[in-house]
Image (cartoon, rainbow, N blue to C red; front, side, top):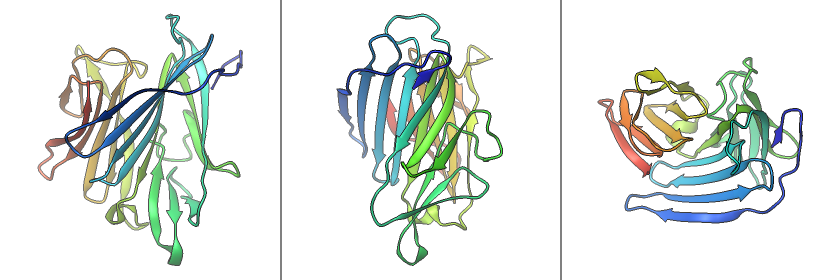
Length: 234
């Protein structure tokens, strides 16, 4: 990650800050990287086995441990790829397919934090390169850069309708800034999910009609549009 106008390296190594296991299926691993002068990066790895969804996200705090606004920055990360699967980007949307033998789609890879359509380049890009899958995103003060990988066969086929979008988060009857909290909706086939993350201290907020007190939430919507929490963290 390189702050605008003042690129600098991020010294130091990853440290495992905590490992949480919950009563419901799902494992979450959180890594935190502190830099000497620059930002703090919290890496979230969340696997939901019943839903066959893997969420990979970097939470970037540009001000680091020093406080202050932090300013604007450009984030870039690479997800290395290997193995027998072939990766094929969609021509219009930012989704990328992992394809196996006999052209069977094994997984759908979605950059949640970016707009769905490739024609919209304002917030960044998600592309397939010789290095792997490269995600770039522009941030201000804080950023939640998330990649969702869906392995559920009934949701990942090319003919299965899929969409995602960023949601408006409300706090005290006003729109919360993207540096405060973010929400996303992922809809594939007949399944819909809400992903919410607070980038400041958790507080009562609303998103998609849900009142949320936790800091990190993944919800699956039931057929009658009620939220069924599959992951919650204070």
